Length: 427
Ligand SMILES: [Zn+2]
Image (tube, rainbow, N blue to C red; front, side, top):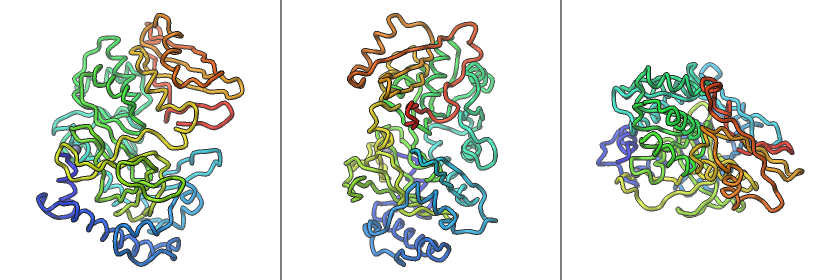
């Protein structure tokens, strides 16, 4: 069963046997009403919101918050004094507006994330496991730091690695520290896996947790086959306190953190709720955060909830894997779609993509483990279904060799993006 069931029963102070859908929903309604009271008494932003709801369905009467709200009203949305803020995260909003959204967290808010991470990481870590963290944020409150705290909570040993080391340095750390599990972004882990395979470097990895980016099926299977390990997908965004949902050992959808988050899926044009099973936009309400709670925040991510119960026996609701951001999936080229196709070539460690709508040219720079015979033809065949009429493909590449073997790094210092030469970038 998903580890979330036991975790949620503990958070609700009830026995596991008592956990049911009606209990979860009653707890969520109670939490929403406490949240409304908290927000109304601690922030001027919520003056027009109701005192309380009679049922969870009534949440659809409340207005939405968007990235723009977070950029324009971030100070008003804060519900605690400055001294109670332990972390501030500033992020660029997508699009060309140049607005920055800001999120505030208290110590207790961060602890909720650590507790959820501990639950999620226990899906793949036993006490004594040594988990390499390929994530930024080693300093207190940062992502790597919180993951490290969560690992210690379950008796596993964090091995911080960061995300900007060379693959040679990562491979060495894996061996030196006898690492058994890893946490990182999907493509970075695949790149490392293909690097290890190419140089036939030994490792003891039994499972990895991937987060921070969408997990293409091609990438999942390639990691599983290359490292001979289990792959657990995790969805987390900063606005939701980094942790959101995690796969159980059935790997058929991600169980959601329903004690801390109330999740809705809406039709992005009409803004009306859609039934379980139908795709729409992910919207969530933070139920337990205090510094800067979010009520009905629109993520922009394409998502759907799964109606059927999971084969693991959990009663915690699941969402399907996120295919990408709605806006990006509408572009003619986007990373999730290109990833799905290009990583089918077993020599591709990573690539950068750039598109010029003026020159009608898709430019790809590939990082390869070895030379590929008839590469252009193979890439052309792979991309045939997505290449727009009249567009041409231009390829350049780097190939692993004795000269760059110890210097090769991930091609991206931060999130992977497709660069549009007219200015905007799509993830
Ligand atoms: Zn399950």
